[in-house]
Image (cartoon, one colour):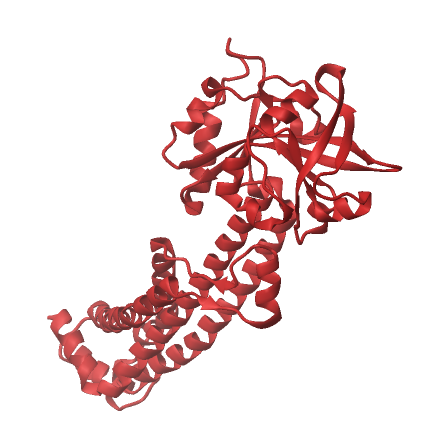
Length: 418
């Protein structure tokens, strides 16, 4: 009876019901669009930055974070990395050997970062070959190197010239070699362009006398949303590696937030600002919704009084109002999803393209000048729960007024409470 009565009551005032549902639908559509764009932009920035720097996850020796030393290495064997390769969420595995050296040419020298990589794998991941501005990209069997354009200009070097690398190798050995420059790459980030030298992994292992070892295994995941789970799985499978008979190295699993704390902090601050704006939107919509529900309650005092006088207990009256509000919420959420879902889907497959100086800057960074959307079930669930919670919050005071309703005053059309 209450369900039928609540449903019929909604359509006695069609305009009021539709306006209230539209307010809820508008809040849901705007919040879905805003949050999907925010999370999509964050995911895009994280993945783009990871490609040219840290990767999403790294396996490192437990002491490498503090020491950054060529002494703290991990095996580069198939046996070691087999556990990571067996995880479903792992898409790519890239071995890297990273160390510092002194680069010299003629009467000039400069401290540089030498990065030994598998060229084909790195290019597949981050398209480094597209940043070669002079010469050619290196191959796995090459005995030559790639050099940043800023470093090449400082040392007055060009393609075909040679430079000397001198540093400390594994176990205190001397690392020294003469290498021909095969290509010059340009990175828009000065810290990379002025310091970085790429060489094939085997050549770097020979230079630093590390044997079949690397400073890090860079791991790319299939889904960014499952990054925490992938990290936990990696920590689980490598938790006992240091005490096993297979080696004496301890493995530390580090994600992009640990590897790039500055970017993580910037994203956290931006996300906080976005969430504040979203709740400000909910506040504006909530005030309008509260006023509508309160007005709907006050103008029906005589009706409530008649219902109570004819035998409807106060608890059932409260239940009736809750059911009416529930129907309005269901209508608003359904309408919001009907509008918001196609909107988010459209921009997911057709992201907003940036233009002008902003687009040019992003292109120079190697990023697509777009604002992508994220399509994730938890985003929809979160916003639906918030909208329903907003409705319940706005309903608390009107329910209190009904609970304290004075029957005699209500029958006279008043709004007095006990």
